[in-house]
Image (cartoon, rainbow, N blue to C red; front, side):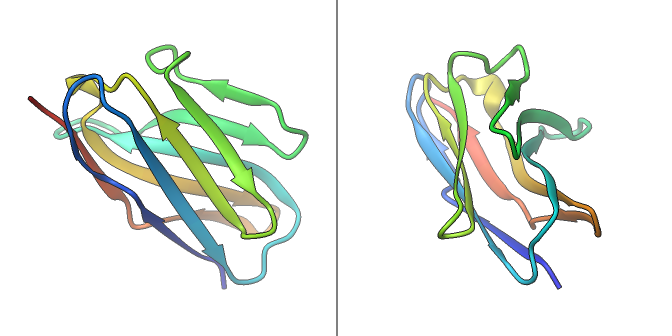
Length: 115
């Protein structure tokens, strides 16, 4: 069984940076995509960044140039480096793993951007 655990969230001032981590455990093979989503208060969950196993990345327009998705295959960890944070980036951030066997989600980590 695959388990995803996010960490690294917190409260930061506008313009600040955070790095989110998502540690994956379990039997992980035939990976299709790795991704980060976020869900602001009272809104739907939306895609923030996605990475294919070939290394192609895609970002939501609202985070392009500020966020970077990356992975450490040895540590089985997915990262989201966030810079120049804005109040509208406030949300619960979820990592997502899409395998041939199914789709898996972490429990989420809260990011709050506030002065």
